[in-house]
Length: 258
Image (tube, rainbow, N blue to C red; front, side, top):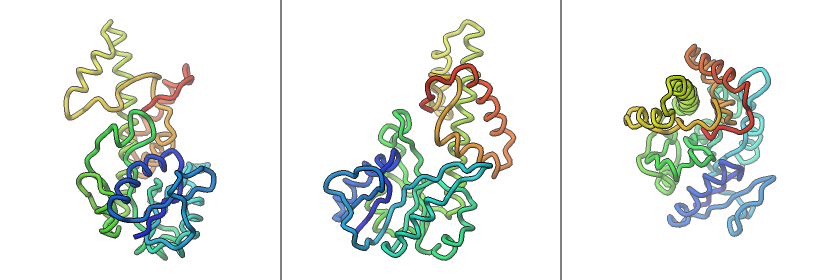
């Protein structure tokens, strides 16, 4: 089978590392295309039709809220005639399911949200997540080739909400541990020791507890967390956003790895 990855940005490079060796090993042809980035040598797209296209284009936060899906919709229109199936790995909001493009091609469009990022703390290779999430309509031959551990299948609305909720939870966790750091400092305790003791509990874990800056300044968090708060009508997450903004006002020199 022939597979084309559309997009080779920060997340695209992580996905390429996941997919290239697995697809090669399974005997599939894997190619990459990007309008701006130079793709790996030997993986250039030959321009011919493919069986499946993995779409990784930017879906930035729109002015006034929501995501701007225009680049994604453009890519889907461009490659729908070139690919038998379109797999979206870009993060979208539930409103994407109401677009005319999705409604017209829902049977040949699937989702596999990326539950990792591009920082040293959130790469899949570091996290060893042990699962891969796909919507139920993704072709089995592709799932078998690229799966990482257990395969979890769900409906589009379920995986979309899960992706937004994941980042909302992790951002709230960062905010909690910043407040814990301040409390430890106030009592003369070692903040890192306290953090470590709390994170030893397997129900909590140490991920997203390391504080280099007070709070989070993350591209994905800044985009996804307000959207989850809006869709879930979450006062808890809105409070975390407000606390985070207040904490960041004195010092915004370096991004938190989140």
